[in-house]
Image 1 (cartoon, rainbow, N blue to C red):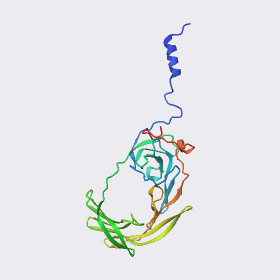
Image 2 (spheres, rainbow, N blue to C red):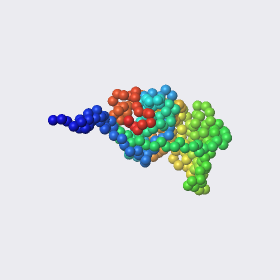
Image 3 (cartoon, one colour):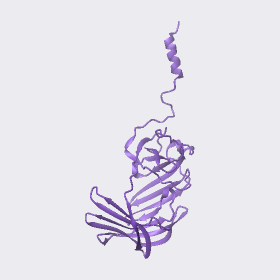
Image 4 (cartoon, helix red, strand yellow):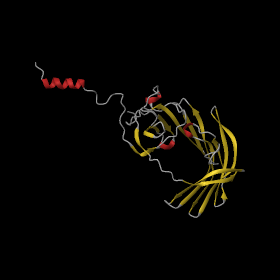
Length: 283
């Protein structure tokens, strides 16, 4: 019995054709339009794969943790960074950044997922503060030379905020005072005390400045707030080591260099490779 040429040709083509979906290729997910990735991630000097910083917050009986980890090097330079925490309802965000920290692409998924839903990148907001000169400000028994920064907003109601920020020296960047005026009311945050200190984060001792501030609403003070600010930026540019506002405490609880991905494509032994060429994550 002769086989028809058309049937034989179709069978040959079916054998040669690749499968419509490779067995190990993750499914493509629709973009999430309710989540945006940050336009930039602050990268610390000598950043490397495994660098991890964890922050824990306790508000009454509720404890939350946020973790940022460099999980791989991206194609065409830069890094792949993952963030976990309460911000996205238990999901983790993977961000591919350029060498200068600008976000190239991002996606979100539950830890353990093989596919992430792409998300849009938020627009970097323009600077809203304007420099208004330098002044000497006396606070906590010291006279500090500060930059005066002013921000005016009209929406939804007129608001003017002025900050006095240390301009130079080892305390550069420290906010000495802040004053906001809105609807005829004035809120002022003042520096009460300032002293050298240190904080232990795991096995790491972090040199800090211990700062105590108080807030006055139309001259009426509220309980003081304590801060421990690192004298040099830590991983990902973080400087706030601990904050105690009397209602809750947030502190950096881990600084490590052996962090791993929460997604299977990087968690099990491919820390030197990650997607980063503009295709959906993961490819």
